[in-house]
Image (tube, rainbow, N blue to C red; front, side, top):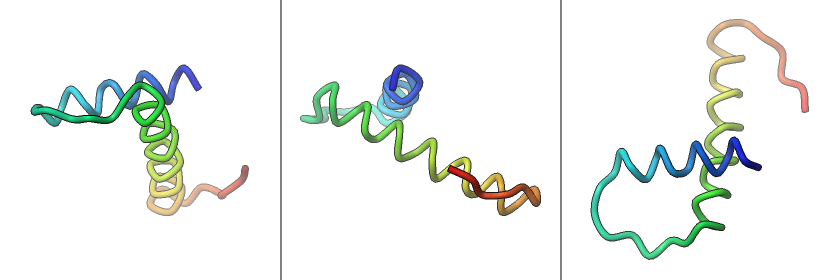
Length: 51
């Protein structure tokens, strides 16, 4: 969850402007983004998809 929180903060820093999303939304966004990124990396580089 901490990695998701950090990834969410980085994502919010890359998109400036007012955003009403709190820290929980930021953490969820980071976690979802990490799953999407991991899935895309596995598909592109021939890895396996495991949970």
